[in-house]
Amino acid sequence: MQQSKEEFLAKINAVSKNTLMETLEIEIVDYGADFLIARMPVTAKVHQPDGILHGGATAALAESVGSFASHIFTDLEKYFVRGLEITANHLKSVENGFVYARATFLHKGRTTQLLDIRVTDEEGNLISICRLTTISLPNKK
Image (tube, rainbow, N blue to C red; front, side):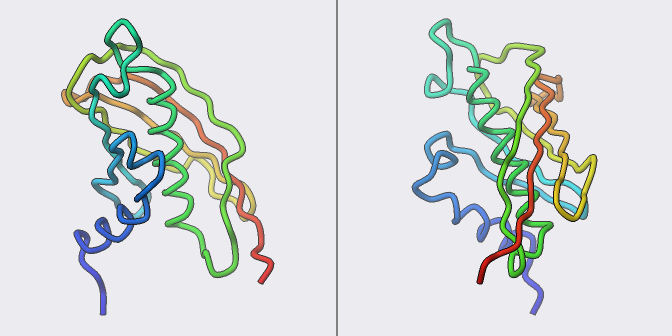
């Protein structure tokens, strides 16, 4: 039986219990054939001392959504996924609301994957551009 989008989102968000994703309140909110979207509330919990979104929290959001995308689109019976490198260019500040990270693949190789992650605010303004490289390695089962 095929599960609904809501059931699938609930299942993947449940995996985040007791992790950094839960601490930062990162939630996967949508997906499609070639993308995954997560959101994170911008509160004092993720602020720099001067009251704006911390770049490290933005990078954590980007790595979370990119890693989840690599996991979802990989045969986990045969492979496990690990992050190799992340870069982030921060373009605009955010004080409150939500930020959204949309991960899409630039390269989906047998071993390495390269994801483009665009972080936007609630109005669609570009906040950060991130790139994540992941690797899929054979399970040793």
